[in-house]
Image 1: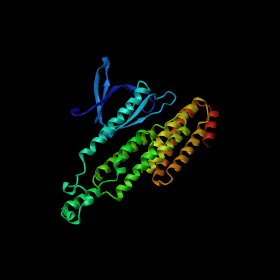
Image 2: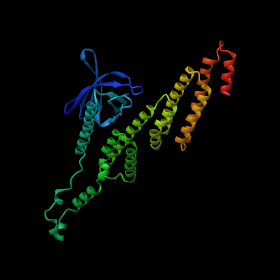
Image 3: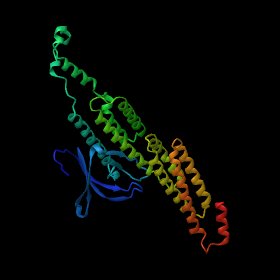
Image 4: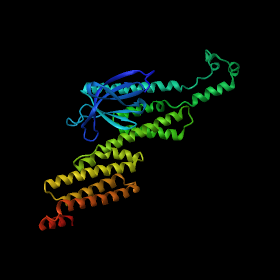
Length: 345
């Protein structure tokens, strides 16, 4: 890309991690400028190969907390292509990257208002010592100029709405998702009631882009709630699930939730078979637990119920195929077959 007129902020080597199991994927070198983030893959003999670039105005950075040594010193960079996770060499380097990303984002936000600066009232409206002006002097002002200045002043957006995009981006980076959504909704309500002020379209575009970014982060959070324990997976999914439903993303959220539950149930079934546990009882209890949690989360979204029914049917078919594969072969003893059939009943 063209790096002319861009300010260099920071650079360094990181390790990209898989967002599902946090295993290392490859070594990445990042170059951060005020308007663009450049990624280069580290080849042999320390050679760099350009990979991609992202505009800083379209990214957000999330600090990932350490969990029992997993994803240690990691940051999550939300881009237009999705979330990418990087591991820093230590906690100091991690904090430095977070600070530099925030600097790049603020650099862009401080630069933009200058391009769309509201026109100033005509200089004919300015006069010294207005408290001493007489009625005849005020009448000499141009009525057209006076009206223009009044309209411009009245059509300026409120201060809190101008700074809202920056605050929303900070809330996303700090994982304050509830506060972020509340501020987004407040901005949308204000724009729905009054969009006649100067710069309303630009602010509306920013709010829409930030809302899409928040939805992407929440979906990523929901996808990462996978666990070997179904109960743990359902507990960790409640927060992003609730917010996605409020954002009218129920269809996407229910699909992700059911995929997470599928992974947890099948992992539980494999472990039960290895330990010679009652797989049938475990399966039906897990399905009942998923249905209960699903209906609680989507109680007001009847359209999502059909997805649950289809999912239950698919899981039942898969469970039956696994029973036949592992317990109902031609070499299986009759006593074992009777035990399995009784468990299913």
